[in-house]
Length: 207
Image 1 (cartoon, rainbow, N blue to C red):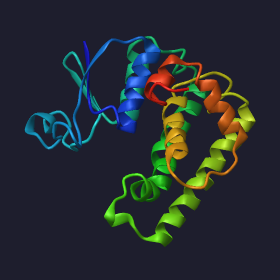
Image 2: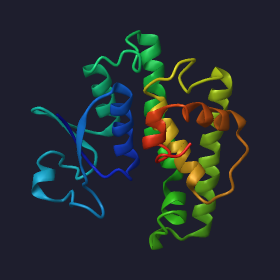
Image 3: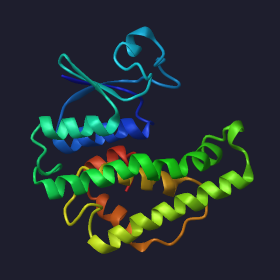
């Protein structure tokens, strides 16, 4: 059985859990990370020298990096409906997956650590304000894209790209800051709420 190493509260672990749910994959999850077993343990480092979750073991195959994992799962387990084979559709999907990791996530890191994690090292008011402004600017890009497609982030159909992007939107909504009015984002999250996997792993069992 597929084994997933990482705690459910991790946004990157939830990418993998959500993907498994969409694909109907059975899995065994082990909690690793802050508050659970240490990722600095030798047995974890043997699987991922970066000491980061998630890690998956699929038989003898071991893989880390959440976006690589969800692409692997869709490719390995007949997820063409989720991660299209057609290059124009697949790479549009990849564009948003990569943007979520490289741009959107970076925009909210300081604000999230300050406002949610309440990290003493992230208490500078000017940097918090700058991070919130940058976060809103990136969310405006999401709003514009969703208004353009009228449906999902990469086009008219739900795809693998919606999983990381929706998880980041959820983080934005749950962080105590002033939220701009983004009607396309609101409609998008309402649309996703019809999916069982969304309720399990993006909204933690709530609409």
